[in-house]
Image 1 (spheres, rainbow, N blue to C red):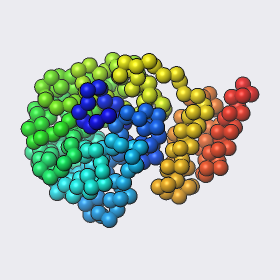
Image 2: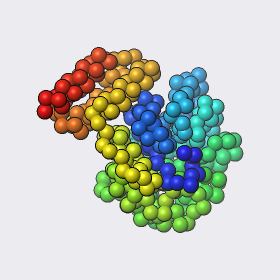
Image 3: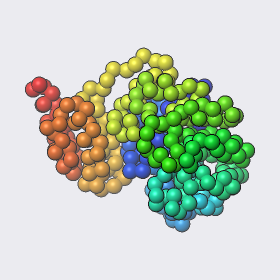
Image 4: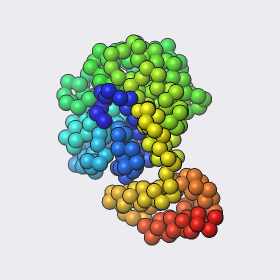
Length: 319
């Protein structure tokens, strides 16, 4: 899949802090190789101040590509310094976070706060477009309190050369409450000349296809963290392919072992395996193995992980 232009609808893994690190991106790409993966969001100011850590933040593997780096902040020059480093390390694009509703982010005039400062938002896009070779995109929300300013806001960004935009179907005021509203996103697409992607409440293949409408693709967040294999189902729905069979316990165990190996390559074994616990809780629930929940939450090593999978296989055989 190319980014952000494609003859087929794009399937995008959302940027999620604490989730979409290199190990998780690699797992999702192993499951559905045509996924476009976004990184966790990174502070442009932090990256700009510590360029020697760029390899740690931006180095990717061929298996992950295309990878889009997402940055947040408010200073155009910080964005530029960070984006140039990301480009140097082979990212497929740079995405600007103008939608995060977290209080600590908005309090510093980052994320959703840029919805209220269109001149600064435009300055950031214009600065990056002047110097970058890779596409510059934005992820934002319907608006601050409603969607009445969405079209003029994004039209201004398009005028600065923006290459594509992703809209989460909730306002800043909603945070993550209520149902995502995709209707303003469809209206936005009709008003623009660039690709538009929708995000919010895409939970399976059926909901993805139902929500796609006139858009260029969908971005999936929460559902992928609960079950990464859902990306294969969503992709098949978007591309009108035969729906895949549900993954077996052995297939998912192999995937999580791959994840663990990749994670250990980035950090010590203990912390890497501990970070898996939130995924493993979902995994045991998926296969009706709730009696293994305590074991899943105590995983601290590859040996613990392999023992969990062995016990899971034994439980399934016994049943």
